[in-house]
Amino acid sequence: MKESILDVLLYLFEHHLGAEDGPTFDLAAPTRSEPLVAELQYAGFSPMDIRNTFDWLDVLARQRPVSSQPGQRGPTRVFHASELEKLDVEARGFLLYLEQQGMLDADQRELVLDRALALDQETVDLDDLKWVVLLVLFNQPGSEAAYAWMETQMFLDAPEPVH
Image (cartoon, rainbow, N blue to C red; front, top):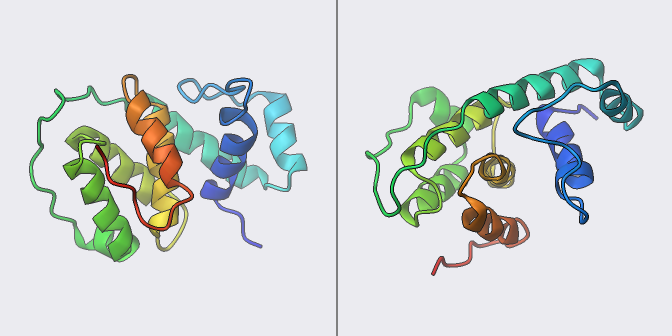
């Protein structure tokens, strides 16, 4: 099986970020500690996938947009041909839905798009995009409510309405 950045991210999320006793890995300051790298290699990930994942996390940690005022709408987003090719229709629709519902602002949307396009995959489907959104919101100060809502959406087939 070909592993990808997303596979490594999901492993880190499941084993370190989503730990019931609190995160054991700081997404805001990703570290390439030897024990963590050794754990990932033991779990079956290649050194190249591990390196690419940490690079992906480094970029995410450096790109923390300043959140807009609540309810402030950004400009209408027109997707570039390369984005249309990589993101399927459901993923693009969900991203716009999140922005319209105020779960993401325009800057966060762009960060999600940037990180989704940086995955080493030919296409990004809805499930993949949900994980990227969750990781981006986890890394955004002040997005705790959006993160909590998004976390509940991870296991639903259709998004739950935002109140």
